[in-house]
Length: 202
View 1: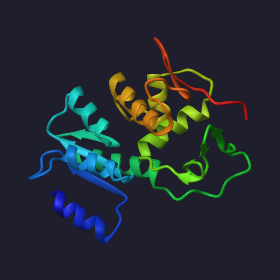
View 2: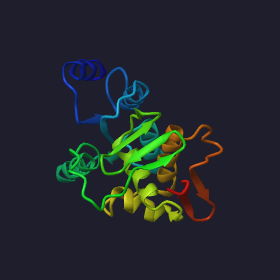
View 3: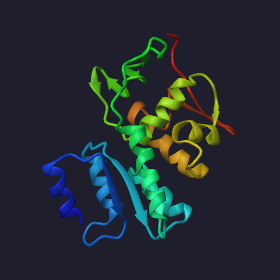
């Protein structure tokens, strides 16, 4: 439950939390929101008996990196754990010569090779899903991406996400990088298509 989770995290950091929605006391959504409000970037996979789009979007909006409805094949859960960990917690490899240089926009520096976003020299806490989305957009800066292509680049073909779920992920990234998320400067909507990341020339 939430009390046990808090105690466990106080003793040692976690790479990933598999979080059930239905728990005694605080439910999984409340716990996930508390983690994100507290600045934690630990990966979260949410489990729930509710599997329709509205519930999945609510889970993603709360800060979950992935969402798996019950009943599920345990092998699928393991595969999703591996996929989330690959996206977010792998130790950065030495930077090859052909890796892209850091991308600078406004007060931000996005180091794709080192998997890091900084604002005014300070690291910005991001979930693995948020970083994967921003990386996909930044690596195709100036190129409008459909929602389907964006999710494929960020998460791979094995994910079945709705357009609304992608919009939620974009909204979360905008809250991290935009002064006014309702009037985005960097991550702009291309109406009828998807999104484009606009950065000044390097």
